Image (cartoon, rainbow, N blue to C red; front, side, top):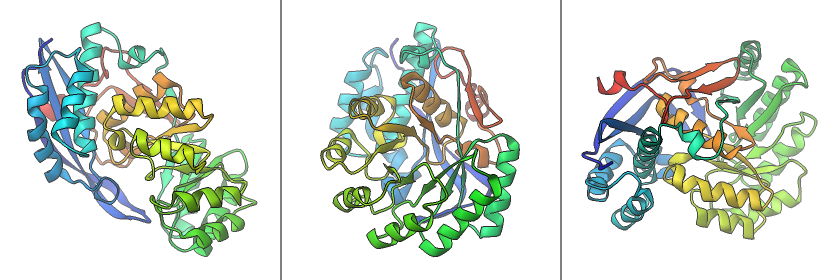
Length: 354
């Protein structure tokens, strides 16, 4: 099918509650929705820019999409590799904009083949358990939030840390005491600590049986992260340090982590994320698939990718903090995300595009 147009629309979704991490806070999600009409169907994608990690915003994404149009318009949907190659020639970085286009292309490929994207990636699974994130907040409020999420059916909690190691550790230990030992606890520092703070924090939570710590040090500090890994028995996961396949190769070379968090927004979409996941598998590194602030559109795409490649952990919960749903075809209940078995991403985007 020949792609007739590349359309985009900026959407702003208020959050149910302010989301606070070590890098900053937000009260709403600003997204750029993408539509690629081809034949008698449309492919949908989404960019979720995040300036603190990706260096982009909605203005830069929309500008990049204008630049990328020559790589897309008139192209055949099956030429996805050529389209991506041409996008790389046109725009350096701008990964969330490329991700939106790439995801829409995969949606088109699935619709053309009359198969869900997860089938194109080699699986028939339609559901998987996700954790849910508890942002930085008071210890009392964090404990209440943890208990609520466990009652809702979530079996894994991701706790944001990265400010004060003493306060962070006390909050994590209090949550462990409140929810018991059957609930998995994961922590994410979002680059907030230096080496000594991270080591101090890990010592203070040694009895809490956390599964791993994510991005304890700044993204550029891979050598120090490797040193920290040698000095702790708690597994270390990289996130902001690995945005591309080249980043992954460097992390592997330095033995900097046990695990990696892959996000479609960092890697330019499904096509860019696949080789990172495959290298992780070769190196016996576990893989989490995470999100920025995506709606059901982006989360559905990440679910298809995650289930298609049978990754180890899902951190796909941003849509649960949105005051309104943008699309149909994704359900979350009892800590389980379920995608549609319909062709492509299986989402209905009428609320976005009419």
